[in-house]
Each structure stands twice: as structure tokens, then as C-alpha cells.
Amino acid sequence: MRITVWNENRHEKKNQVVADIYPEGIHGTIAKTLAENGFDVKTATLDEPEHGLTEDVLNETDVLFWWGHMAHHEVSDEIVNRVHKRVLEGMGLVVLHSGHFSKIFQKLMGTTCNLKWREADDRERLWVVDPSHPIAEGIGEYIELEKEEMYGEHFDIPAPDQLVFVSWFEGGEVFRSGCTYQRGNGKIFYFRPGHETYPTYHNKEIQKVLVNAAKWVSPSNRPYPTYGNAKPLEEISKK
Image 1: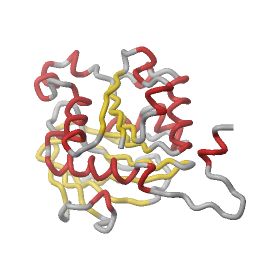
Image 2: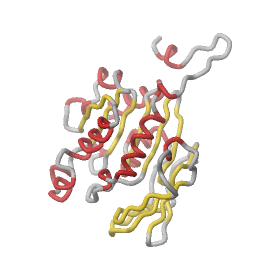
Image 3: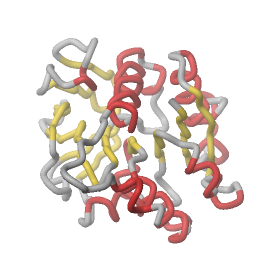
Image 4: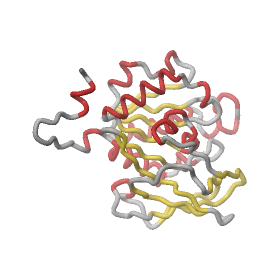
């Protein structure tokens, strides 16, 4: 499986706290976890030509991870359309944390993706509400994070195809924090944890979810049946 981990890579350059937690960047930490689990992984960042997401890179990507926060508006619409096309063709997409407000996630959801938030070192408990789902494999009843940024409802997204995790925060808020969707031939997983000033992506259980998510959204994990003379979307899109 070929994975590309995309990250703005801005907080790491501007905030020493973030740089200390993620000296190789958030993308580097996520990529290392995935590579250690046998995946073929590359990274791409906002300030690279074409944001590192050239036609060739995307055509050779089975699963794209997306982390963005402070520079959503700087992402080129041309690149967003390019990623959108690849998702419809079958590329898997894992959107992390504040990537909920990215142009690509909003385009795929068709909504504002607004939510409530509070950065106050809240304890978060991510309850597994669908233990039979492959993304929750190897996870117990919940994942507990000592400190995280709070996201709260209402989360302006379409009803998920499947809801895997629901978060509870010590302030009393709840949040749909693990949501799956399908758009065209592509599978999408949105996963809430990952605020940049906390070591969330060093957490072994969070890492397990990322590995599971990569496997689940991968196009190799879902052969599509054809009916009669119908052709798969991949063939139609090449014409």
C-alpha cells in the first residue's frame, strides 16, 4: 500500500512547543508509524511545489492522510480539485483533527463542517461505539487522552455512514470523533484527535487507529462488483 502523509508543516516552524513534540513534523511522526507497520510512505507539505501533491504523486497514492489547521486558505483550489477527483476514483482519504475545516473535506462533505472548540487541556475519552468496525480493531472500550483540545457538537457534517468513535470531554461536551464516508469509489475516515501542542500522535492507541484506518480506506480493501455490462468508475474516469 502506498501512502502519502500531507501536512501544512507551519506550526512546527512557528511554535517551539510543537517543534519539540514533533521534531520531524507531524507528518514525519505519522509517516514513521505507518512505515513501521510495513507501508510504503512518503510525505508532502504545503510549501512544496503544487503542495507536494503533483499528478504523479497522487496517481501513485492509495491512501492520503491530511493534517491542516492555520493555512487552509492557502491550499490551491486546483490541488483540491485534483485530490477530490482521485478520491472519487478510489483513493482513500484520512482527515485528521482540524482538517475538518480543510477545503477538501468541506468539498467532499458539502457542508460548513463548523463545530465548537476550546483549547484548555481537557481530558478526552474516545468511546468505541462500533467495536466490530475494522478501524477499532485492537482498541478496548475507549482511548483516554490526558490533554487535548475540545471539539463539541454541533458538528456540521452529513450523517456518517458509520460512527466508530464518540468523544467525551471533562467539560461535559461530546463529539462525533470517528466518522466514515464513501464518495464515489473512495472511502474517507475523519478522526478528531491531534492538536499540535499535545503529543497525541505518539500515543500507541492513536497510532493503532491510524494504521487500521489506512488499511480500511485502502482501495485494495474493497473490490467493487459490476452488474451486467456496467464498468467500474476507474475505467469510466480514464476515458
